[in-house]
Structure formats: structure tokens, C-alpha cells
Amino acid sequence: MKRSIGGCVGLKLMPGVLAVVCIAAPSLALADEGGTSGVFYRCDHASSEIRLDYVAASGDASEVPLNRDRTGAEWIAPQALVDYGAGEDGNARRVGQKSIVRHCGELELRISGGYYNTRVMGELGAADDYAIVEIIDAQKRSSGRLAMGPCNAEIARESIFVACPENWATSIVVLRDGADAFNMMLTQGHEETRPLLPATAYDSMESFTE
Image (cartoon, rainbow, N blue to C red; front, side, top):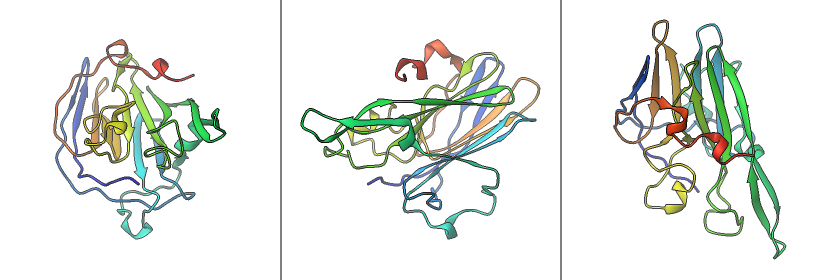
């Protein structure tokens, strides 16, 4: 149900500023893990380094780059972060979201479930749920909410929780650069620079999770 877009790389996190620079590059589908799309999460606690990789349900193991060793990676299933129930008509509906938190050295990672339609039988209702992530450092500087996966800006439903395409990515890598700085690389489909702002400047996970 989802479409692939190009990719981009680069972003600088320094004391007070996180500069995001993305360069178009082809995106790769990864191997399916459990029949639906999701995210692999890896953490190096000693260096406070994080890697998040979107995995397409239709992925092929042969397309996984050699440097994407998933040994020790945690599989994050977005469907487990979305609550389902029955509507008044008896049909299945999404009725809420949940969030989980992971700590990686000095970084905090918040992950929540996202979706396109509360009605499972509605437009894009049968599409896989997706992960929404936020990365916060020890100084409470935030990446803002980022959705994991490809997106199509022409479909309004893909911007319900996170604006498409500017805040969607198929890969996020955070690497330490000095005592109080990080490099964060995004794989997405556009190019931009943005500051890392206090968490209150962005919509935080707390604004829509229970």
C-alpha cells in the first residue's frame, strides 16, 4: 500500500543546534520481519549512538546492504503501538495509540504508533501502521516527531500525525561528534536544514499518546 521515495543523508547536532542536510539517494527495501512493515532499532550505549531502519513488508533479504548488520537489533512493530476496537457499526477501528521509550546513553528515544485512518475499512485503513519517533538529548533538545517509512505528499492522510514528506525518513542514524554534539543522518526524499529546538517548540509525543 505504500510507495517508495528517494533518500537523503546528513544532519549536524551541536550544542544548541541540530542542522539537517539531506541528499537524494535511492531507498532500499529491507527484509520483512513478521509479515508487516516496521523498524529495526540498534543502540550503542557507550557512545550514545542510535540507528533506526524502516523495513518494508515486501522487502527482500538480498537487498539489505552489508553494513546493515541487524545482529542485536530490536524489532519495533508499530501495530503493537496502536489500539484496535470495534466501532458502532461493528467494524474494526483504531481507537488509540501507545508509546514506548528506549534510553541509549545520553539519548532518549520515544516511539509511538501512527496510522492513516481510524476506520480499517476506509481509505488507507488497511495499510500498515507506522512508527513515529522522537530523539531527545541530555539538554532536552529534540528532533521533533519523525515518521518512519516512505510517504506521498499528494495524499493528505499521510500527514495526519507527521507532515509528509519533510518529517518522514526511512533511516535515521545518530552518531556522536565530540563531548556535546552528534551527527544525525536521515534517509528521505528532500533537502533541508533545521535547528534542534527545545522540546516544547515541537509537538512532543506527550501531545498525542496515552
